[in-house]
Length: 289
Image (cartoon, rainbow, N blue to C red):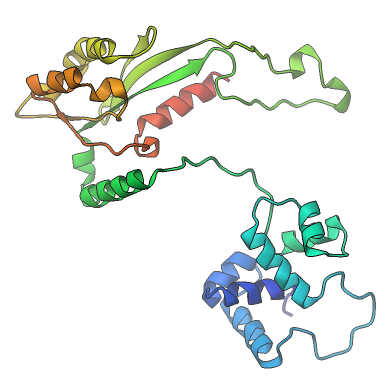
């Protein structure tokens, strides 16, 4: 016996098919456990033939809170207004159904509420540079990437460096000492510089004050020769990576690299996500929670 398919799922199928998705893709979006591409094809073919999805038999009982057309309009509206709450959707669409009913239909269609992940707003010129970088190094092998020494700075707050913590409590324990998060209106922290490569993590250097070209050169002088001598070795060389912070791109710093024959890989701006050392920083901050 086949699974009963709610009306909202059927209209979800129509909605995604109207967007041009394949039967297989639609099945994956609507309900991959119970909906197959064959079912998608059958339901959409019925819609094209009849112009509706109403069953041929007569149904008794309460009239659905939303008609088929309203369901389709609801899905189209949500697809174009991702951040609007159900109350606003109900008002702007003039729906008579209650908020819980609308939310139920959305849940059945696969639209769940999630915390929106943060994404860096890239400038157009940096998008172009990132694409050029990706195309240039797309064919690099794992062995070639093992020659890169990744570096960066990061700032660590001394109180809850991760910004948010979760605790377990009963409803009457909201403001006990062990259920609150310490908060400092003027939090203090430290900035560190670090490096990582295929051979492991490198040094972790505390940056005192603000980082400028001179202080950055001192860090390089103290660490690179000691931890990564191959950076200056013509026979077995490594390549150094750094972002485009002002201290990194200063003329005196660039000359310092040139004098020592250290090769630096050109790095596109706004590309934190490409630097594997960011995973190390995230791990450390998580451990400090």
